[in-house]
Length: 294
Image (cartoon, rainbow, N blue to C red; front, top):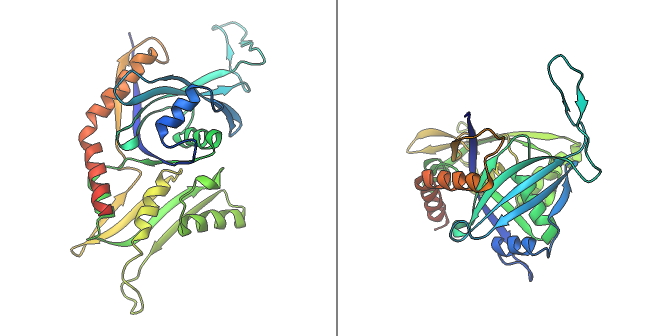
């Protein structure tokens, strides 16, 4: 039987509560109870939260995020024979899906990456839109990298990042810098923006470092689709490059299966195993973030 591998990534979710929704679990429970729409048209495809399970692991919610494709459907056939189109009913589509497990502790989302389906930001957009709240997802970065970035003892000398134009500007970082990013792209009708900002230590009129608030902004925009994101910090006179894309926490999990995906509970078990494998890094990340807030 062939072996298939699945990549599991980790994010910390954040929700600004309103009178109806006070937590991510509240929101997922409301979706389960059909208090909100479970599907939404996003980027030309219908996407749906499906099959939520609340009792598989302690203080967690398992589920799927499904993408339906009903255009450009591939053909089927045999070697040496004509191909045939796959016939779909009007309400049917080919399904691609991401599996996920949400853990209430630290609002941790363990997300099965599937490049044929959806990115985590499309999942976040659905949650935000159907409930009318602001939900964001910040990627979990290796603890040593985030500790070096967020530490008050290091100075930020340069940042570089590349961002696509947002489909929903409301989900971008809610700070002056994030607003400026969106405004620049919209004003120029640009589809992407590449920024490099730094200080020249040879200048007499420079502060010698970038504003510390850019550390958190840089970390935040990684969760909003940045394709590159690097920081260069100085500590004790030594420069350290930090790559917030390459330094993200993830795990590969494998299982023997003849199917595109093994049974749902097997997928959730693999995601939970990935979390256990990465627990030390996850604990280190949250500890480093707590230290940065002190």
